[in-house]
Image (tube, rainbow, N blue to C red):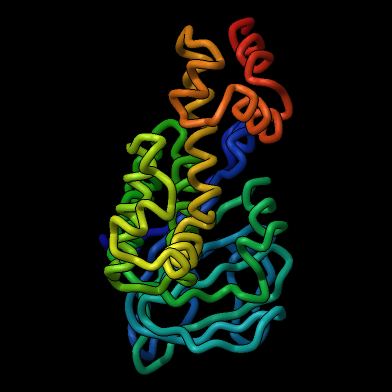
Length: 294
């Protein structure tokens, strides 16, 4: 990543319509034994270790070199090492600093907007669990490089684009925390192959049991690992694919409900209508009529 750079910028008009927008970006290296933090930041963003600080915004902070310490009023003190990240939450007191023996390089993206509030409300991000041990730091560094380029050049829409990069980083942190594998295991690859077969197979061969047999995996183990990786059971995943295909046929073809039910492997048009109505709140015919009237 290029050398030290940070900037604070006002929100663009209507930036909140996107759900998130950024009001600051920075990357700064603090050498060993240096005073921290430096005195170049705006007064409202400065803090001392003794007093700490409370912000009104969210910040995603990534440590790419060195280590240090993080504390907040919502969690116990945490030792920070290279490749770790933490989130600063609005109205939550915090403080952090590099180890004087090592210093550190930190990068941050400041984000505001209802999108962040939604993530916190749904416990995707949580002030009680603000620290992330990451794997695959090269992905995050590449995203931060792009964010820095945007912050320097400030093209149209740059604050929204930087915030969206921040969301990408949060997504990586979230999933890598829950699936901390440095590389896909054999099971991961088999589950990915199962997803591909379900998506592109015919109704006769996309059931989870059939695919587990083809891949040489016991179905109980396959079902458990499939849900762990996708968040859905094989049956639920298959149902989502069927629903998507049904909607595609209804919107983009002249096939009858009977023909669609046969194409999707339903026992009868009645079973298609029953399943579709249960999942969409209306019959396939009514859904099709509503789409065609738009």
